[in-house]
Length: 202
Picture 1: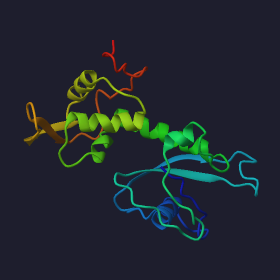
Picture 2 (picture 1 turned 135 degrees about the vertical axis):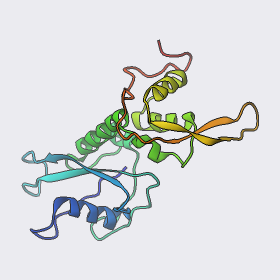
Picture 3 (picture 1 turned 180 degrees about the vertical axis):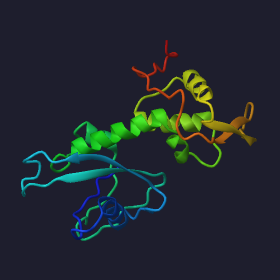
Picture 4 (picture 1 turned 120 degrees about the horizontal axis):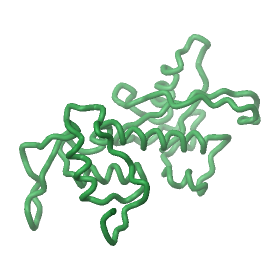
């Protein structure tokens, strides 16, 4: 997780173009392949003590993040864990904690209604691999049986691959790959309570 930001280079620069430029300059991200979408506008008076500043935030989602590039305005650029930011353990400047919180919630919601989670798995993956993505983004453990049922109910979310993954003991693990659907129906709704690791959800 990171908050890369900067100013428009000139009055004619498009906002999305500026967001792509900053991500390339400060985070060394391949702007041609990442998922980038408008998040929100932040302009509360006093949010920046240097003067009236309105920020337009974008959410970038991509697997396999490269190491950030330390630029002239981001000499200490580095990725940080979102949980450290959300709990206040890691302090950010201005209202950037709120921006991060809004971005995390948007990412969590996107996993409910889109197949974006498969982008964080390999070309083929197990249901367990996919579950780990959801647990990492949602920040809660999930009941494997309930998760399997929800995945199977969402038609076109994943499809069976031609091969199985070999394991040292037991049956080979079934492998899947991303299906053709981008919007999930029914959606993968987040549980209202974390899964009790001592037993399944009710």
